[in-house]
Each structure stands twice: as C-alpha cells, then as structure tokens.
Length: 168
Image: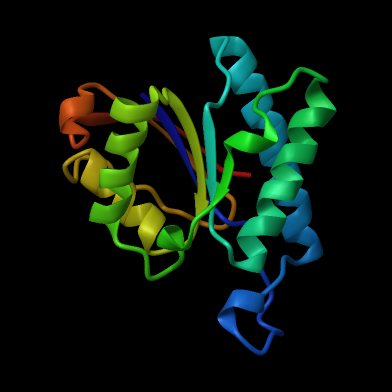
C-alpha cells in the first residue's frame, strides 16, 4: 500500500472559526504546484489513486481542489474518480492516529485499496508518518508538504518506510 500524506496548503487566520480558515494566494499556488508534482510522480510509477481522503475543513478542501487542478494541468489522464474522494471528519486537526490506521487497514483488507492520498492537518499528519514508521521518520510538515509512505506489511501497517517528501 502506498500512502501520500499531505498537510493542507498555507492558510490565513482571518476566519471566525478554525474550520473556516481559507488558503492564501500563496497557498493556492503551492497546492497547485504540488498537484503537478504528484501527477508526474504517479505517472512515473504507473499508479492511480484508489482513494483520496480529505478533511472537511475549508483549507483542506481548497488544497484538494488546487492539487486536482495541478494534476490536470500535467495530463488529462484521470488519476481517480469522484467516487474515490471522501471527506472524513476523522482527519481534522484533532483526529486520532489509531483511528486513521484502523481505517487504512480496513480500506486495504476489505476494499483492496492500494494507493491513498490523505489531505489533513498538523499534528495528525506528523503523528501518522511517525506512527507508521515506528518513529524512524519525522517529516517537517510545513504547509503543502507531501510525504510518500510505502506500507511493507499491511497486516502491520506500522512497518512502513518513508519513501520521499516533497516541499513546495
């Protein structure tokens, strides 16, 4: 199983609630650029995403929209369909890493999901990579950073390897 874990892009602080924070202009550009990189990466590996999981917070939703646009700017090839995109409350900033790992195990064993993109928040993205790699990999998740993790043993998701990180 391959998992691309992305922190949302740069967001402003001019919102009444944390959920309503939106991307800055720079944040839109960063996410678009990361989408272009991801499309090229997926093409080179001859991989399509089986599932995209996005936090319902506005900045994560906007990040996904820009990533998708960046991917489409590289190629008209489809990397996933709308039915594979899921908005999940479980990956908000207060999300529980064990719940996410349990869900990933379910997706693999019950739905044969092989390739997943997660767009979420700190501290969850940091905790997820650390937990998956048994604290052997620590990623500095600045806005829009993507970490690529390969799961070696799906029965033991915590036996994973950090393959790459991409900063915008």
